[in-house]
Length: 392
Length: 50
Image 1 (tube, rainbow over the protein chains, first blue to last red):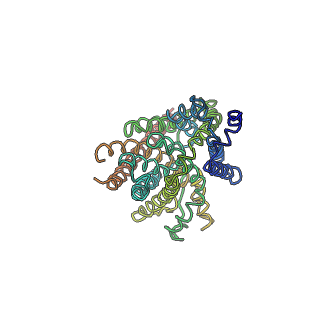
Image 2 (tube, chains in turn orange, yellow):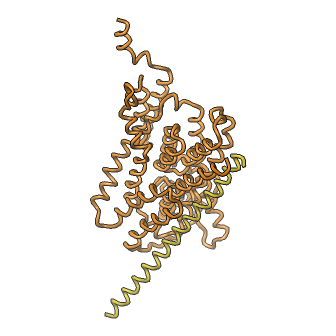
Image 3 (cartoon, rainbow over the protein chains, first blue to last red):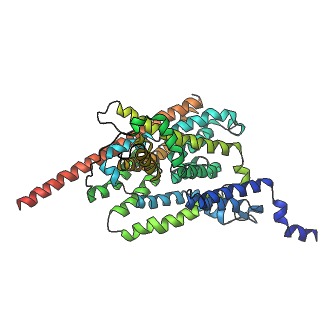
């Protein structure tokens, strides 16, 4: 009779207070997705996944020694890097690189705005000795974790997941949540940093825009050549750059419209759906409710702040040498959060002076940020193991 | 080398490589544009002759 009683109420017996905290966190993510519309396509599945995996006995993860549905998705979609890479095909099919091809000089803002990644890596290494869980880690693992946290500054969810799945699988949940949450908070994070680093007159700088035609052959050759070059410069970045550019080639070739639309719609929706709920399933209470999660959330914000600062300060540095000045706010659009960042920058310029139109320049910088973030992800993946082997 | 120093080395090498790789992409875009523009001009000139 006792056994029967235990079997019926085993869910109640297995409940712990930490589960309720995770239901609350999952609920907050769903609230942000539904009510505030912050990255709803990802935050909602992540929030629900977090609730699912923290139900008593966590049967969606494992049941009777056999892997549950979410563990199967995690093993086959995240550990193999399949989901983030498939997302890149979809993203590539969605991106129009024409603004960058019209103003190629803007590509350098896509590099400058990756500063947050590396500043955050150093930041994590500075504070690590004060966090017991990290202080006891060996140096190599700590550098890999710092790199995974820093890559939140790529402002690019799939890149963050890709790097974290290689370097810090245990922290995949908080890193993904931080990456997607801060991406949706770009309109709140960037303006105060930009205002702090620029004067009113700098924000009013007007920029001329020459609308040049970009031939179809350039649009087709661009993804092919970039893939080859990225493969030579940072071979480890090929799964990211290669499939992004594959998606873009499908878009630009002009003869695969059906595939392009499928990649932009069906593929993007399906993989996002599975990716979100699978990421949510990594948020188990025992792994998530630790001081390291708080550090990841905090340092993710730091990464976005330094990204913005890096881009703006780079533009100001260029202005020291240029006769025709650049509006330094453009630099902040060099992050990968597309097209949100470009819109924010343009709106800020319009608020300062309604005759300041910098949307196209901001979009160019923003598209460059997509390339810059992927290259930065690949470069971090290539450099960290070498540094660990040589110096740690 | 301490881990902090390694972090700074990663920052220098990482930012340097990101800038260098995007600089290569920049050159590719500019060269592509120039090649396509010049071939376009040639085609127009041939068309005018005909």
